[in-house]
Image (cartoon, one colour):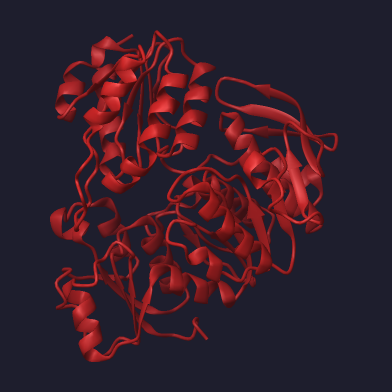
Length: 455
């Protein structure tokens, strides 16, 4: 049984998925230690101190922290097979699992609700866990995003240890392990290009559905999910008739209101994409017997996920937002939301890796060309590199050149300081991209630079 007390080592513990599992396991009474190359490079990393405050031992990622006392070693998929900790664990005969393999073990120990989709699953999983916690259902939760109201000095916000056997998990398709998850219930939000071609991801989602004996809750409006989900699924929508259809939708500056089955709901986070994140939560909870009025009461309290439309400055003139958007679908949703807020926006985007940028180059270009208005400007930062072996045969300049050729305003800026020096050129800035924890700090610095200019 995976939750029997163990000594577990996590290699790559600083990542959002790994840190969530490590904190969850520590809360369940396991002895936990770990390492991360990001901590070796930056001892001031915010997650480093938080993990240590939880009693998790942090060691250098050089193999020296692993000994025969560990019952299991869990490795991030970003840790290469030739790294010292992999070699050390093998030499000691310590059982080894990847992060998704271990997450699958955890999921099998609970009545699991898996939240899947190429966009929105972090927010939806976090929102569902938040609502269940507020409703007294005492859920367990592991997600890829940090729920703001779960964040404490000892919790990054991406996990929750409850007393029930209910477990909400973010079921990511990126590494293919989603086909091994055995949830009781599943939510399917959408299907689009991200880590894999649509056809390959569709196959993974089909496998998840087959592994789900309970409710399958699916977005009726998503064209790529059509025909993928059996007829007995529970469906939600905002554009077509369904079991849980949003009506009378009113988008405000920083919130959205809507009705479901005559009950009125308010989301305190903006954007139609967040409406689609809320609807399956409403559907699942109501199918579990929770009155709509009770769901509505707590939904308005939800403050969102860290780095999902985080507002660092909004003083009437200047607006600075930080967001995790990194695939074409997420970026399009972000830019559509901004069109409701400001007439001119400076978008500052950092592509999150060479392989993803290569895979999605065409769709990135199409997304920016479609969504950039004549009053908008796009700044591309150099492609984020987290280390390891990778082919660096693409650059941000490749994107900017084609976007400019389509008549849109775009440039590449190599150094962030150069952007800070130019902050007065724009009243509204949106900083976005995945994987790089320092983007939030950069957004804060942009806000400080504009704040210093006054109103």
